[in-house]
Image 1 (cartoon, one colour):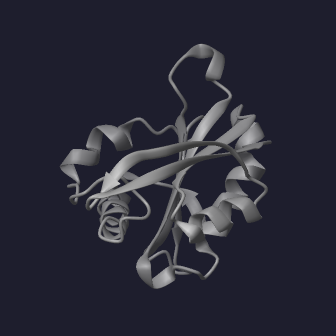
Image 2 (spheres, helix red, strand yellow):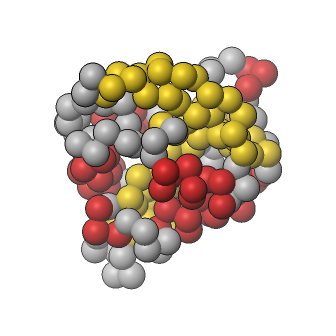
Length: 163
């Protein structure tokens, strides 16, 4: 049920991402993005190094979630550190999809040359913080009031886990 993303998945990936925007908990984007907006982003993923994984329904007819591993900070000394992004279809939330994707990343990360996973999560996003902490992530930093969502200043947590 977990596989590498292909170009045909991009509309579903964008739909899941856009569904997270109104809740103001999972992303700092304030307005929906388009598939065209995400073309260059999608092209940066490499299944052998920095994958975008899809969690599909049993018949693979529906994308229920996705996980991205992106390079952190872009400098050579950080090559073994990645930023994790996990998004789940609203109908599949709290059903273990995010956890299975995260466990997949933890298991396969070393084979991709990854030694450290980082997650940047709003402190008020209790479900995501709980997901990462239950997978062995710890709070490595806090950036107080760095985001403003609908007039409310929000803190960003830096969660990390060595592999």
